[in-house]
Image 1: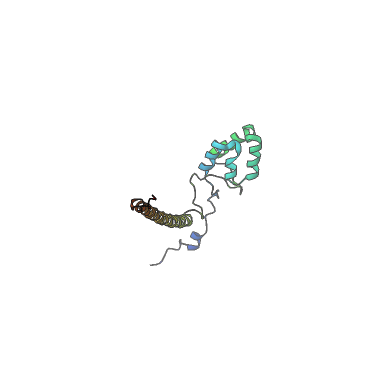
Image 2: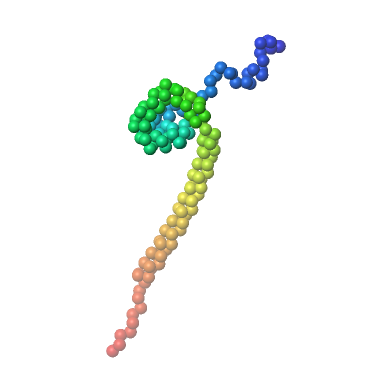
Length: 153
């Protein structure tokens, strides 16, 4: 069976030119940060614009005007990140450093902590046995008859 002439596999490999390029930052996260801490430029730190974020901190959001302007831009989907790409995606993309690698490190740390906890438990049990032995030895000494010293006449 042959494929029709309209099928060109090299066309599928290339990205479509009509799809606009958008930022990988989440619009929802940026909007939430702008609402909560927009006067302090939290949303600008999030989209990797630290210089303008510091300026927002120093001017308290441009006395509210700059903050309101950014809030409208974010709500409309026209706010841009440090690479001048529009922040339009509502979902949060998974970054390469999150996920399995982080879980692997977390699992490794939990295993180390479990080993340390088991070692502490063993030391505590050993100490409890020693204390118990010492208590028994002291009890035996108290119960043992004391020798009578000869009385002088």
